[in-house]
Image 1 (cartoon, rainbow, N blue to C red):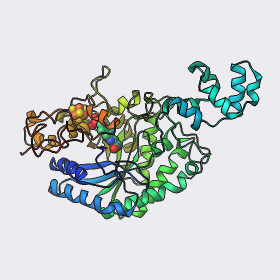
Image 2: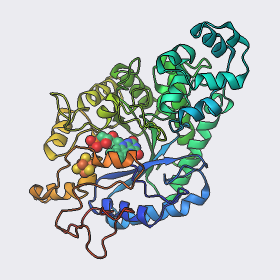
Image 3: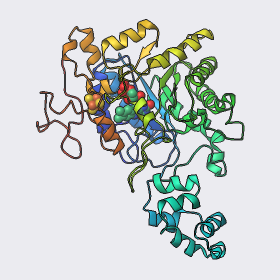
Length: 446
Ligand SMILES: Cc1cc2nc3c(=O)[nH]c(=O)nc-3n(C[C@H](O)[C@H](O)[C@H](O)COP(=O)(O)O)c2cc1C
Ligand code: SF4
């Protein structure tokens, strides 16, 4: 879970150490450290692992988790690659600077305005005229991609093969992931989780919307090619003791996207390739995200697919609890039917003992994962083990934490601040930058 705690240049600092120590104290079976960037490029306060200089900090993170959990918690790190996305521009700026003026715009203007002089108009006049057009008229002049850039901010896609750095992704990514995995192993992690889910590069290769024409898009066999090449490069770069699995989508929840049948097929291929675990998520895509305000970037958890990724109490009749379990069950069944015993991890609305235990008993999954419930109460497993379940702070599934993530603010839980233990204002309790929220969950001693 990205908590926006890394330093501005992507290093582990004290806030990151405090964050993971607190989760380790709950002694979960495993922690997967937040999505960590594999490239050596600035990406704000997101953790990075794209160069050897990040290894020392990550080793300190491993150490605090070993200490905090008494060595009981296995520790993985999630490796991510993502493409560029710009903020939604001021319309004036978009027409002045970003739009690449084409003859098609001139032709469309001359048709729309019934004036053939626009066919030969200078670029500056075309820009000026476009910036005065009403939204409906713009729709007949700009193409779909340009309209998207105007209304949502420009977003690169894996299908932008005309751009050299996008065309080269299949050549670049295996090595980038492999080097990152090697650093993770050197830092002491037990393994890595390859991020093949949500709105990011590798999920976009798997997506049914991937129409690349270079053998890495189109049918499933081609879409899975790069994810398998990345896996093989990673597997070959780390020792046999290092666990390598991936997180991918059991359903993309967008028009024309992958459904559970695709996920089951990919799951079998990943298992056949030798992945150590398959972790399933759902949705979380840019394609159906809400239009951001001017100056903000689109956030992939704001549309229907976002809701399926982090289901809330504002749900349909099925409700948010264990909402994604039937999908995990289908993928697991396909993997088992193909003769593989690869463990399957399920997540999404798992926030209590009964939901988790029933999922395991029914065979929906081999391992249950809980993001928000563990944020709300990092000790919830211990409390169950000790028969003190009534002390658990139950996640409200209202996504206050996700709203903080969307604003790139330090992620905290609304249940921490008035828990009765070291409430806001108590001397010595670390506070968020805005001074209003606890930065780590309240202490709990068994
Ligand atoms: C604040 C926040 C940050 C998240 N960061 C990540 C992340 O870095 N990688 C990831 O795969 N999922 C991330 N997720 C999604 C969760 O892993 C999980 O799939 C989702 O919250 C649904 O599970 P839950 O009901 O147990 O919370 C994040 C969720 C939240 C609320
Ligand atoms: S902020 Fe809300 S949704 Fe997030 S973990 Fe806390 S209770 Fe759950």
